[in-house]
Image 1 (cartoon, helix red, strand yellow):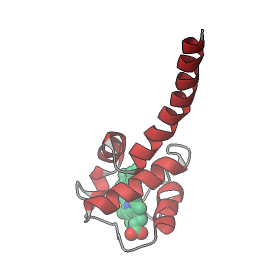
Image 2: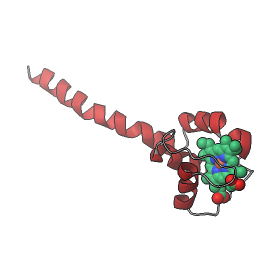
Image 3: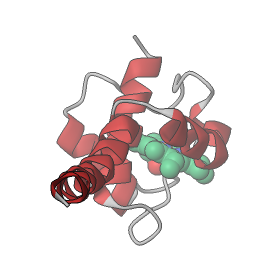
Length: 98
Ligand code: HEC
C-alpha cells in the first residue's frame, strides 16, 4: 500500500517535470527548433542564419521581429509561432552565428 502511494507520488512529480523540460530543450536549440528553422526560415535567412540577421541585436528586438514581422520582407509569425518558439528560434539563430 505504501509503495503504491510512493509510486503515485513519483509519477505526479515526474509529469510536470517532463512538461517543463521539453520547452527548455527547444529554447536551448534542440531538434524541434532546428526543424522549425529549417522548414520556415532557412529559405530567406540561410542555413547559418547568415542573411538578414544581426546577432548583435537584443533578443527582445529580434523576437519582436519574428512575431510582428519587419517590412518589407520579413513575414509576421504571430499566431503561427508562440512567443516561446520565437525565443527559441532567435537563440538558435544566434547559436548558428557563433
Ligand atoms: C520571405 C523571407 C523570410 C522568411 C521566410 C523569414 N524571414 Fe526573417 N527576415 C527576412 C528579411 C528580408 C529580414 C530583414 C528585414 C526585412 O527586410 O524585411 C528579416 C528579419 C528577421 C529578423 C530581424 C533581424 C535583425 O537583424 O533585425 C529576425 C529575428 C528574423 N527575420 C527571424 C526569422 C525567423 C525565425 C524566421 C522563420 C520562422 C524567418 N525570419 C523567416 C526574411 C524572411
